[in-house]
Image (tube, rainbow over all chains, first blue to last red; front, side, top):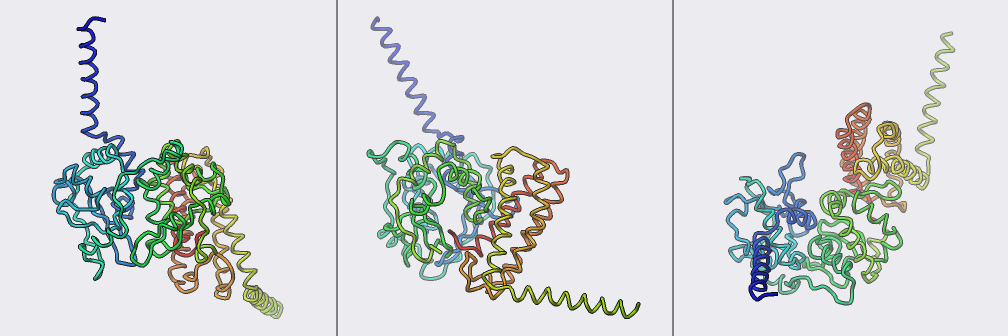
Length: 292
Length: 152
């Protein structure tokens, strides 16, 4: 091989590298659309009524601390997040901070989203940018004192929020790690399935073990204590992809919605990874109240 | 003739009375068992429809029309089983069934009306309309389970 040929090859490889980097920098909106489903953005950022426009906000989340409304996240400059930069978006997901530096209430599941990879944040951003802008104003939260003090969230964060991207566990298979990422970072399953203490902080010793959910209802235990007894992998996949149970039962609408918008949209490989991860969790006995 | 008519009228009324009395006398544990049986059978006939709506099971208009009619009847059965005398029985029924009866009835009525709609469209409706009607039944059932049934 001549020197010039080598150089040409090198330049070619460099060009290819740049091309990939440029594609990355822009974000892949199509991939982002899939991620928006895996992250369940639609549920809170869309009204519940029929024919509601996706992502223009409005859904109420009734918690013991008050009622939170998902805001408009379309690219409208005033009503939505049209003036944001990608860095603003990353800061919101990773650190629970608005562009002006104020805290988000943890009704926005940034304690989960903080685990998202750079590439996923970028692609999700690209997708949100591609949405039609809507001028519908976001509804203010209906939260009483003292929970309405955004500054107080700083202390909550000190206690309960650990920022940082998801790190795969080298001891676990790539599939289980992928499932862990889907479950904990994107899917934010723990926001409902991990019970909270009186301060609204997740009880880490009862990770995904169910109990009282954010809206005061019982939430099932996802650890093998319950799942192993209940269903095999195929049955679990049917449930999470189509809401089908072996006996034709209809799950509660709170989960059915998650199935329609999120777990039912996952690729078969991602769904299998999520199930493999749930199977790998340490078994935690259900609390008596949730047992029944 | 007249006497006969009156007599049979009385017999009818008495008979109806017996029926009602028999219902009221059903023991709480029996009522729970019966309402659960009605729910179980609805699961049997709704499951395949949910599978068809989501594309997991091949679409079959005949099965849908048949099952929709079954469901229409079955869905009338569980409700009188949620008698107040069953409130201390062991079941997944949440206390709200007996405390927030207005909302419970509204949720149950909603299920019935979505099933009626499914019965209507299952007679020759196009696939998309029928699937949407199945999903509406699913949502109505799930909404009631959300508020009135304990998770397992």
